[in-house]
Length: 144
Image (cartoon, rainbow, N blue to C red; front, side, top):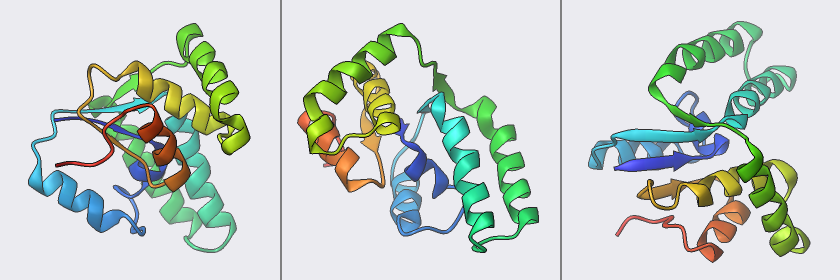
């Protein structure tokens, strides 16, 4: 199975979050071959853990450790660069869903996901609004 994860789902692989059990079950019950990520996930991932440190949820040392592990794991992921096709697709999606709450970085995640439509079996996000847009774009967000 090929997966696309947005950053909210990626984070659950490294830190106990609300969706961690769901992600654990997903990997336990399915043979995952490839994990596709938007290039912006590298930035969002670090930002997430520095925010957790800033707000006192985790220590600086733990933030550094998690980010270091992720950076080592990057070689196992397939990162999709934010190129002209992705940015134009993100602009199109913002025109379509911007008045429904689609925001800048999520438009890039969604644009990346739609470009992977033919390569990915399952699209996962912990963001309910982003999942709703994935569903509107006919991307599979649940496993039968």
